[in-house]
Image (cartoon, rainbow, N blue to C red; front, side, top):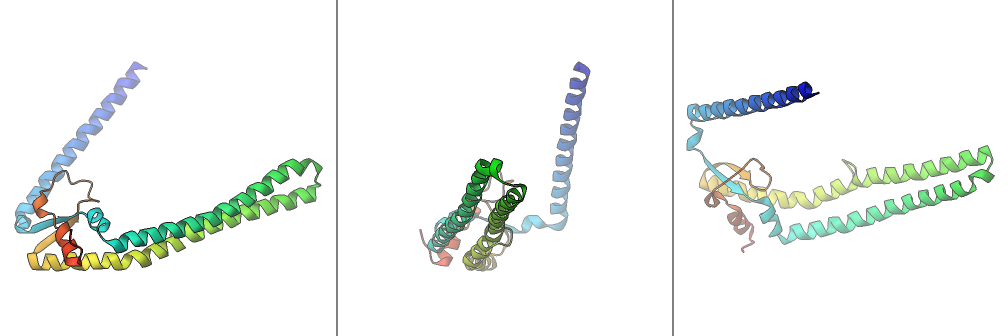
Length: 192
């Protein structure tokens, strides 16, 4: 058993070492590419989309609309699920007194209710469901407006790339001097 444990530790240690070496090689290759292509001369900026969105009233209103609609749809689903549960409890209490044909009919009713609840859930909250469509219709104009403001700022200030600080988990540190979030809000007409 001890041999297995030490072998496992060696395997993990070896994998960690390989991972560290691969990261160093990747970083070295990245630096080499930067030096060769002259990327270091390009300008970068950051935005904090969470900060920007929190300061846009239309975004907050859209979120509130989505939450209210979501609660209504979830209520419909919960109602159908409750009906299925009632049918099931009734079936359980009466099953001893039912004929085979009656049992099958009740089981089919329960399955139909469960399927109805599942279908409603898919219809409202599935990948192409009503919630997705509603969110898209409410958020797309806001996102387009932000994108256009960022694009205009980039064209004027000659930024090559803008990174969203809120979603870029790999950013460890970034100078606040390159964060243009407040400038984007000003461009959109929302000053602090």
